[in-house]
Length: 154
Length: 154
Image (tube, rainbow over all chains, first blue to last red; front, side, top):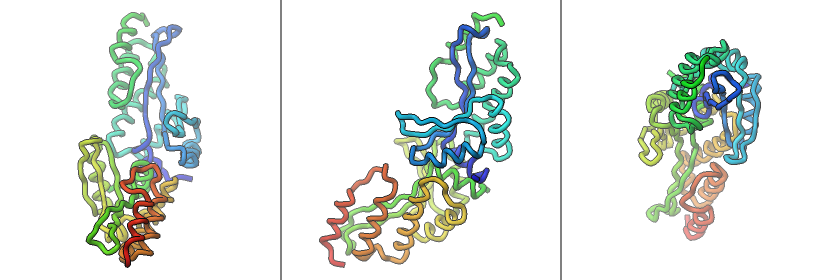
């Protein structure tokens, strides 16, 4: 079994707390909120990726052909709130990723309480999420999402 | 102060054990052997890089403009043998980087004993070093270095 502080150190470098959004006409708010926690390692470290999955006891592993990495990923909101977030509260990140984690944690707790289904809270979630992972690529700009929200009545 | 297992986890993802070589006509063997241990992080994490330097209590920090990272690096052979290697013996790496570390450790101990100044041992050091960091860029091929060695008489 991995040491908890080792896992935090590894995630500091290679992990990602991310909230992505997808347009969904079927939803009243028009936008789906998808928080995820992931770790990507070069394929030579597939055994380590499996150990991290066993450590957290949730999520799945998939192979990315394009960058030859194995990615461990947790999307289930209950696992995020009950298994992932408590680990990083007990063994906190030390670098700037801690700022991402705090926002991620706030978003997950709002999603868990179904607040992402109301217009005003979703606006808050979008604001928080766009302060995270500033260097990452986004399908939509914050403006795109907020203007979708303007048009809905929830 | 950082937790030792946290440091091992961070290095698993972002650290590098490397042995590079430079042609040096002044040396009897014609080749300088340069082991180094390093950690590179995005500039937003300069404070964390400083904490890692304080943790190991050796080495230096420099900024790389080209990739906007701060790099903590230890080249002094005595620091490598007395401070860096013992940490990873007590709190071992778990992924494939452990294989690099074992070879690095072997090379450092040979360099510390001045074995890199004799032709036959240097050949051994080159063989070990070229089994490490298979994906990294090298100034010389293994063949380049071995053919330099062929011509010297030490």
